[in-house]
Image 1 (tube, rainbow, N blue to C red):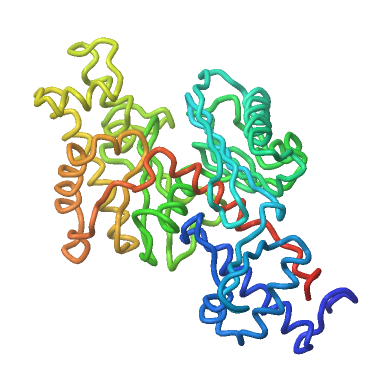
Image 2: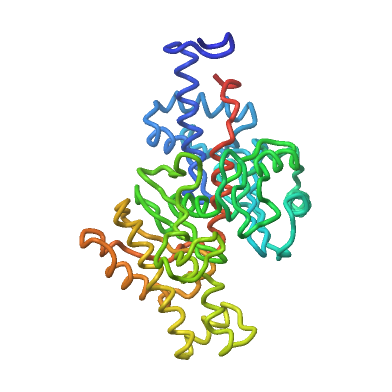
Length: 393
């Protein structure tokens, strides 16, 4: 039963609230160019609402500080965008050796970001303290404070169930920590915790390479291998948040021992550490970037290492394609920097191990590069931020 403050279903107030939500949804479209505002006439066409209805709601949104308006040609030519005063969101992306932070508006568009190296032994409390300091610095640069932050999303390279980190393989200092609650306590606002590959999948689906595809898979290959799955335009997390752990598909029961304790996992054949490790004697002290540069120069060893990793990755993606039948497969993470040096063999591996019906599924590199998880964190934070539409109902 609705409370005394909620509009009754079917009432004028209820209809106005629903119409307000439709306009806010249009204004919060992250795919729209950051600098481009909607005119009231465009909002009327997009929402199917009468121009007079749009005009009244826009006026109320402006009065309550949720929208900014700029007079245009005629009343319906007035330009409308979400107001910065409506609040900001924060995205955090923790990796094994990096921390990325971003400020975003309530449409999920990034307005400021920074990335810094992170020591491998930083625990969750020190990591969050560093993130807090960096966010405060960005806020100060943009004339805002922590009070302007409505929601924070933190992305981590681990399975996350109800906010709790369930693996210590990449970030041992986070095992068993409720990252959602710890982040909320650190920033003093609402927080969400999510697997980084899931956030990458969300970002590529909304504003990247998988835009326009209702079902897609995003695989992030860096220190580990993880996938984010979009099914019917929705992020699929599984029953307890561990869907997409494709790095632990078993390719060979007698293969190398994986850090998860099993043998022959995909991750032991296709990860940054594996590729660099294969070339340790030939290229002592080399980074993955060095390997890619050497491969582009035509050096046989680096070319073969990337080819082998790609063939195994294609094998793993074949399992995903056979099960889910996505319309596109997106490869991201640090290894995606190899581009076609990797993807050409990924496609061969996919064709070898998949059904004919899915063997030709496009395999592309992500458009967002190593920012995908950070972009997804901001998008999710914006999506989970509720605006006080009751003020204008």
